[in-house]
Image (cartoon, rainbow, N blue to C red):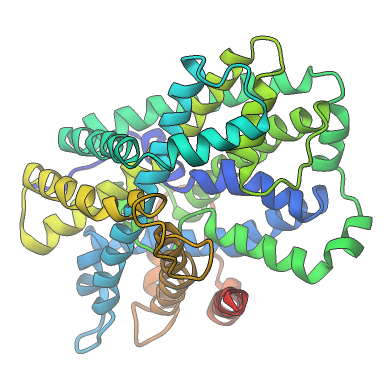
Length: 455
């Protein structure tokens, strides 16, 4: 039986964007913007996304499309005989498992907050009460945490069990289109809030006084980090979707389109959040609690707040689930290639395995709260996130780059021929020096700064 294919270019773009679009866009991006002075950070982030994120994403798509295999097996199709690049293919599988071990829990939080908001459970609560609800009733309840995590895993199994075209593509198309529509509605609502103009100005207008307060080096490093991590490159999850498409379109152009969709969601989330914060006198530098504590408090104080809050957490749930579905499909494809399993067997075995592997993360906030692997206040989620974000993603991206540009790997000519097949934007020959020397240096910089940041 031949390899499954996506049914349309739109499906490929939305699934790839769905994999990239996640909690990093709608949870992390707004509070990182708040911590780094607003509009100037956004401009620098967009610059790094173009020169940094897009080229690496193009490489990952190219590897998948050329090999027509999952990341676990693609190196074996492309590497020169006698080389050991294929070892990294196995590491990408481990990375996908690790990501899902905590991402299923975070996606469960989003579903839980949607239920809390839609049912009116949060009505009348102030910020302190909402904070207590999040830390006690949500994170503090191990049974509820496991139930919602289990729902996320079951959704992943069912959708991927149906197949790439009829399951993953169809469901992701619906979720992504609904997500984009909900964001537009929420952004328009935020624009119309009295007093929201100050938040918009903070978000969209560069303020060079912020450079003095935050420091240009901190802003540059934060922007580079966000541009790198937002596209989920380095783990092979994008390569799998490259293997599901034909050669009608060149891959640099498709990478730009995916980056635009990803950026639209990230930027639009700020358009929703910052006007609401300024309208109700909320500090935009509220950090990670901005989504789960600050915003529900705002929804409790605006007309039709229950409706807007419910829509917001539907949007958050779709953003999280789109990543869960994409990465689960990558795991299914990897294990099917490695062990010769059929789709049904791969989905069921991985569903059971991921449920079991995700339980420690759920318990890390309650039963296992005493286990603090990274020091006081840390959790199992923090450890799993650190391994993925600080090691697997940057090291994986560096290996993808080196494999594409060195003679001992796939090589520059093979990469360019694959990436440029089809209509659209092309990789130019003059880009070789940049991609061979500057791009790896930037990834190494992100990796080293991430390690320094741990201490």
